[in-house]
Image (cartoon, rainbow, N blue to C red):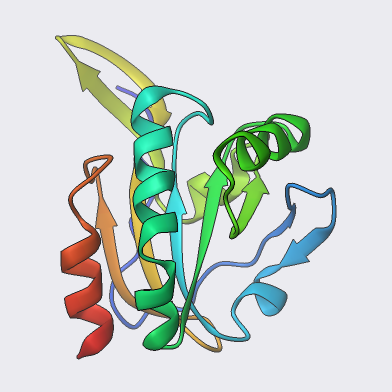
Length: 158
């Protein structure tokens, strides 16, 4: 069986990372978690599901900001591909490149997947709500590409 990585739980400290954003600027967890953050992990920029998910987050940025949250996406894509994704879809939030999958693994967003009976290792679409300072408020794994924004808004409003 494929190795499963430990999922995060409410109250956990968010793991350390240093990843380049879509502009090639390296950011650490300390930089990112200066404010409340919706950190979401997605498999591949430009694919239909990931594009819908990014557009959904983009469409609700003002609602997240009203509650004091920023949105940050993380994928195994290169900086160049993330920049192209940002430009082509007019995204205005940070995207982080995790080509080594180290952050995905640290956050429990990588592991065994079963699609149509085929078992393989890959990115688990995941959304982690993190409070300023890096404490996990909520961790959601194997979320759908769209449809979990209302749930997120309820979580951050409480």
